[in-house]
Length: 286
Ligand SMILES: [Zn+2]
Image 1 (cartoon, helix red, strand yellow):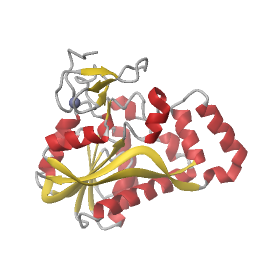
Image 2 (cartoon, protein in one colour):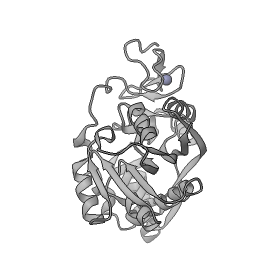
Image 3 (cartoon, rainbow, N blue to C red):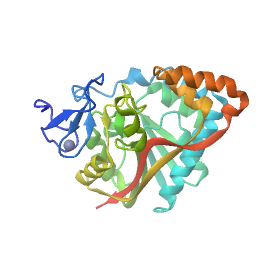
Image 4 (cartoon, protein in one colour):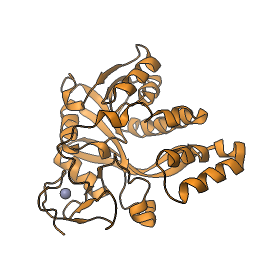
């Protein structure tokens, strides 16, 4: 079918077809760049209330989760550091500040920008004076062009009604030899092909989902080119995964994971790097 009324938020094509027909809410797939997106959210601001109290607490309360997330960020920063030496870093969607914290320990001078007032408060408590964190949208933050050696957007792009506006702003903010690191769910990866419309990355706040080709197209249209890319491995425990599926319930899977976590006891808290259904990419200005 044709989307008709709403062009693709990445490439502007008018043609789209229903993605996994029967999915709720309904998603379209662009016939040109293969972006998967939810129609009807283009005019919304990034809704602040989605990310307020409760959005972060379900994992902040889990003892191994903070250490696990820090390990994931350290692995991602190491990928970035293959292309650019530590300098000034902007974390877009800095959440509760864990990436900022790990980046500072690795010699970066971090700055954050975050739409959730609640997350900004938690991050400021965590980092004390260790980083400047702006509350609001990237496009509104008072930042100087060409001032960052690196920009990170981990698990952010899929939340943005207008991902191109943010990518273009990143391009302006990057120093001439700077690099942008992105992680985002990868439509077309193994877990998505196996789980179809029930894939765990299909959730209410993920309104723009990228295939590898859609991400390449988006970066290209923003004046950026991918230098290195791969699949994300996140450090997780079974208890952490189970808590995720309590926060985002799925039939069968959520109760099964809960039962398994109980049965395994302390073993359920052992952390391992696991495929998360996401891709990473490091890009630079063209
Ligand atoms: Zn498109």
